[in-house]
Length: 414
Image: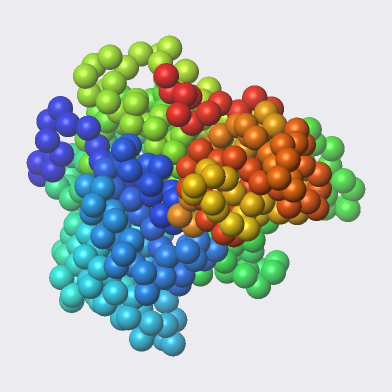
């Protein structure tokens, strides 16, 4: 069967977003975004888009010229079926372009209502016959298993005309296609229902059968490194897949901006034939400044060995860290200032900060601080201060201090 992707074209770049702030910072880089509601998602904590406002969200996506894909890919129990129908009805009304699913009940509900269906990686599609099975059901695309290598993906491409999508960046699960039962076993919170507590990221001690502790070089024995394929996009493009997916629906908007920007720059360079190893290395260094657990190439070049696990590091291997500072109380547009309560620590002129909320993302340097009508060089913990801001912020937005050499998003790719 033929390849649906046009010869010489670049795969669609699909970015995971959690809210309007994340959407706004990737709108110039993504071709499509995928998101979830406050139910039936493998990212249950991503609850900022609800059935009530999916219409407004999807309309904004369309306004930016992007496609929207709704993830409804958890385990579905009998009592969930009425709510599933409601969620799919809301997607239809909102004009969502496709639903990401793997449970037959969700697939059937979406197809019955005329929606395109993308088969979730949860289905663990690992061969062309499996892809074609879902095509017979009416699905338009399959998101392939993350355990496939490049040769296997190329072979699947040769045996199916379905649209194929693969992951290129983001968190990796230590279980096959994310079907993990460790969280449910230890804490009663199911990863397959979107409520993973990530015990694979904890520190563990390995014991021998006789109870003796086994000496190991690291403590994070189950923590998989994040996937990063920025240096290998030409090889992935040559497999003939139709879409590249970036994981990260729980990451902050700064992460979304940086990752989408890096991959868009890389794909544009691939398209015009100018992508070089030095450029790829530069982009990877930029990605290393964002939240990550260390990088690997996953299964694309074979089953990962010890280099696929982050034994030594905790949840964030980036040299750049965000520290909570406080919360915005009010915004004064005429003054270009915000009232901020310093709930966690003080703030000084010259500090690099991020202000973030459901619809806000602003990164800047602190240029001015006021208290009781007077300029100050530093606000102390517990105080309410006036903070000069470069754009609109909103009440309840969170203020973070960025430390250890952060690169401003607007300048990072120049």
